[in-house]
Length: 360
Image (cartoon, rainbow, N blue to C red; front, side, top):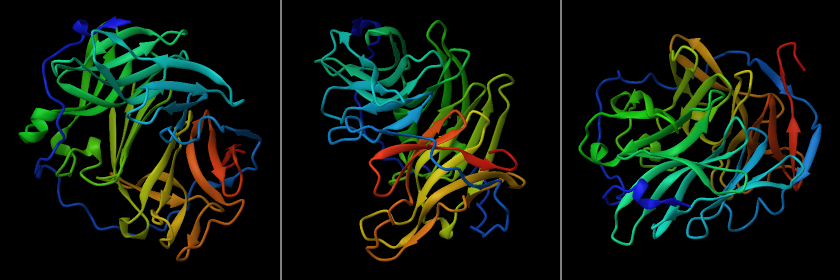
C-alpha cells in the first residue's frame, strides 16, 4: 500500500462549469454524405464465443476489451477495484488501489499495460479534503507497485504503449474554469513522471471540457496499440493519432452520418490501425434511428475523416422496435485485429474478423 503523503496535494474536486469559447479553429464545415466506399466490406463469422456473466452484470460499469482482456470496473460508490477477465471468461487479474493515509480512492479509468498488468487513473483524498491525482500500476497480486502524481492534471483516461509509457487524456480544473490554455493529452513514465504534452485546449471547439463530454452525454476514447495512440472525442468530432516513434501528430475532423445526431457508444483500435465505432441514434429505449458498426475512413478530404457503415451490421430501428436476433448489438473493443462484439439475443461475446480489402 502506497502512502498518500507521496501523492498529496491540497485541493478540492470541483465540477467544471466554464463558458469556454475558443476561436482558434475556423467554423467547422457542415455534415455531408460522402460517397466513399468503405475499406471494410463486412465481418466474418464468429470464430470464438464466450459468456461473461460475472463481468457484465449489475454493479459493474460498462467494460471494454483491451490487450486480450475484458476490463471491468466496479460501480462508483462501491469498492474501486478493477478486474481483468480473459477470453475464456475467467478472472485473470485484479487490482486494489489503496494508499496509506487516504480516506478514499476514486478510479476514473483503467487499462492494460503491454505486459498485462493493470493501469488505473483517478484521485485519492484525505480526511482533511486534500486531493492527489494519480496514475498507478499494480503487480500480479493486485497491489500498487508504481505510481506517478499528475497534479494539477486530472487523468480521466489512460492507455499504455509497448515502450512502457502511459498516455492520459484529461484536463486541469483551474485553467478550464479560467479559460486558460493547457495540454489535454500527456505522456508519463513511472520513472520520469511527465515526459511530453500534446493537444492544447483551445484547439477543441467545446465550451465545456472535451474530456468530460463537452457538457453533454458524448464520450471520448483513448486507445493505444504497439506504435500509435488514438484519441476520438465525440463531442467535438475530433480524431487524433500520434506515432510513438516520431511523435508526429495527425488530426482529422470527422463527418458523422444522420446529420451528426449519432453518438459513439463503443470504440475499437486494431493492431494494424483500423478504427471502428459503435454508432447509434437510437439512444434511449424505443427511439427510432440507425445503429451499427462504422469504420472511420481517414483522409476522405484534406483533414477530414468520415464514419462509414460496415456492410451487414447497420440496421434502422423504428419506434420501439427491438434489434433483430443475431444482428449486431454492441462493440466492446479490439483484440488484435479482431473485433469483440455482442449480437442481439445471444448472451456471449463474439470474436469476428473484419473483411478488409483482400484480407480475411
